[in-house]
Length: 218
Image (cartoon, rainbow, N blue to C red; front, top):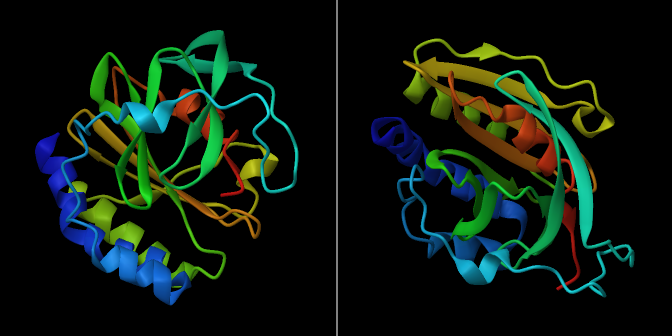
C-alpha cells in the first residue's frame, strides 16, 4: 500500500496547487504545506475529531443534531448504525462518523476518514474552492490514479442527488481499489479519494458518511 500511496504523493503537489488557487492567502498556505505524507497510515489528530457542540451552526445557520442513523453495506452485507456528529477544524466542516471509523487531519486542506481496524482502508477528503478549474482537477486526478494502476476507467456514481454532475474514475493494483469522486456542487465542491480492498469494500460506508459533510462558519 505504501507504493500505491507514494504514487499519489508524487502527483499530489499539483493537486495542492489547484486546491489553493482560490485566493492569494490560500496559495501562500498551500505553498508552505509539507509534501504529502504516506496516507496509508496517517497520523491521528485527536483534536480534529472532537464531537461537535450541539449548538454549533453551519453556514446557513442550521443546527445539526448530535447523531444520525446511517444505512450502508460492507462487502455486500447490509448494515445500519448510529453515526455521531464530528467537527473538523482543518477544513472547517462537520460530518456524521460511524463508530468503526475515525476522522483526522492529514495535512492542510486534506483530511482522512479511516477504518479503525485497518488504516490502509480510508477516504481522503478535500474541500475545493468554489472557482475550482475542473478540467485541471480531472486531469490531475486521472494522473494520480494512473500512477497506481495501469487501467483507469470510469465508474458508476451512486443514484443520489449528492452525486449530480459528479465525475468518477477508478483503478486497481492487486487487491487494492482506488476510487476518486469529484463532486461538482456549486455550494460545496469536493474531491473524495477512496482507498479500499477487494476483501474490505467500505466504499458504501465512506460515501454515506461523505454525503453528510457540511461546511461551517469559522
